[in-house]
Image (tube, rainbow, N blue to C red; front, side, top):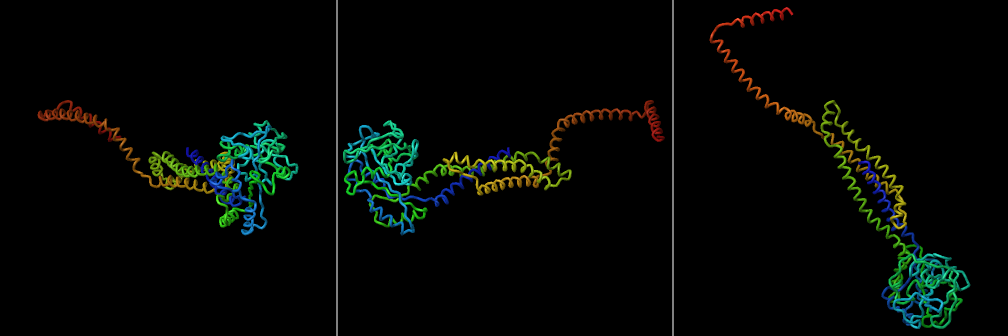
Length: 478
């Protein structure tokens, strides 16, 4: 039992230490090593004001000139070669052959500009800051940002299922302000890996706000189909979303502070979707770490107490053994060393087995429990081993002191008590024997007194004297 408890204790604390170390690294060095992309987007209150059925709300969009001014801030904070990720979005009308997934409170395309939304990204980093969440290609291929044919798009799996689309299929969308239509080709089908933001999933009021109706296009789709103009009107006003690529978290903090010092449009804020996504990916690890911190404390305390109780059971009723050893000449330190060895022999192998098992299983076990994040055993896990060794060493010292301070009189006291208990029935019998003896003595004395009163020796007395004399002579000769 001591071997098992020691093994379980060290296994748990090694794994808990590995998880804690992985959490510290994830929030420390790994977090600082991130290359965040900063965006300037409307906050929740402003997003509600950007009504999808009111074309005048396009006037509240941040213009490309605004973004140019923000880009100048990058040079002020030491970014020598600023890098950007640009996306443009426009509403698009459904057609007879291509239908969008309906919203809960749809309005006519004249008010909304359309039932779908066309997004054009200029590089793969634009998809990484997609406002509707990350997605993966389940069928087909991703976008080719250098293509010139102006047709290739990505559609959601739900959208493809509704319209019976496959890779290579053709879909037709309409201009938000005119009767023009555009033939597009499905290059790939995607599925989201992030949960839908509130109001942009199946709970969307307007069809174009449902992220499953988002169609991601190559840059040439907008240019070749002349969807961008110098003097756009109504829903043809593009909505820009620029991501500022930064080299470190410190640069992101400096950029955020610099933009706050500028006169930004009311209702807009700076954020980093990449950092937000990274922090969100750490939530399973953080939850596991919170649990393992308590488990580690419990294992140290509970394991120590259980081992102490087992040691107490092992040392019970050994006072007679200690006393007998001392009677035959064994010293107290020698007995204490024996008891210490009895404690160390099962616990040390338990620590070795549990420690090795914990170190080997920390990475796969942590990966399974922490949402795929590796939690390998590191040098910090040795501290858990040392703490466990300290607990076992304390138990060995306690076992040693048990022999050093053991009493030696109990062995004799116990035997006397046992002897007294065994002789108590015999004592009563002795009293009866004594009484009968007294009576016999009284009768014998009475007879003797009667003989002495007569003062007449008997023949038997003479024969007895002669026999005794002969026995005395024989003993003398011998």
